[in-house]
Length: 296
Image (cartoon, rainbow, N blue to C red; front, side, top):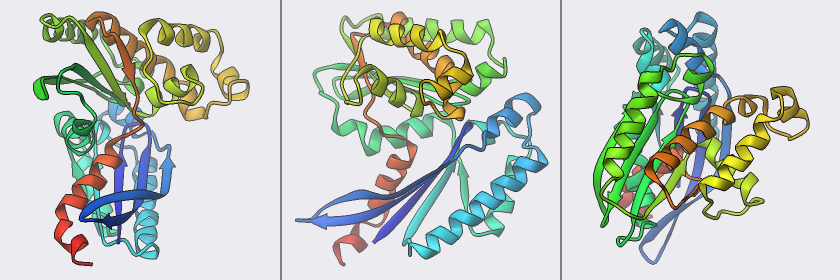
């Protein structure tokens, strides 16, 4: 059996096709195919409050191509979720309707739902119930932050602060200050807090800091890599450091957001487990089809 997850983000659109396996009544999945289309809907959504005709057309073309792939791979079930850019677009519903006509149903979700999908599907299983965690997801249009203590959610908030918004100068000193004050308040009663970061940028930063390994790293090490990246122009980051063109610019504001949160919350360290919304969606699909999977 195969499932598919589609994440329509502000910077890129991702399609994950996963093979679903079952052993001793335990269900798990392996990644079969992962595609990423750097459409950057956020540039339109955050500046003009609507998806432009060219990107509207590209969005529909992408969904049509994804539908063909779902058919070719014989996908049994799928779910498509759109986040900040589509939420902010005045014509987001029209885009959803056009994509439905080519065979893809899209759910526009809020930041809280996005964080819950990732947490409930994956992060809850790796958290030590005796520790305090600040979960941080940085996207193109928003940043979701949640605090967990003793295995329970103590507080969660979504901020309209993301990498594309910053690059497009749609961030304000007030939203930065609001985020700092919220982090300071939610963490004030805890002495030792560990960070968990998700998103393509923190995954890339982690690989750069840890030479490809998945290990926790401190604020100082993140700041060091940030200073190193900032010393290069965008073209140099692409040609000398080997970053993709759609990663070379957003990685700088992403690092700034993570550094601000780590410093404000006095985080001991942060780890990037390389999971995202598509992983959480696949887990949701497994739960939705659990009995069918076991009966195979």
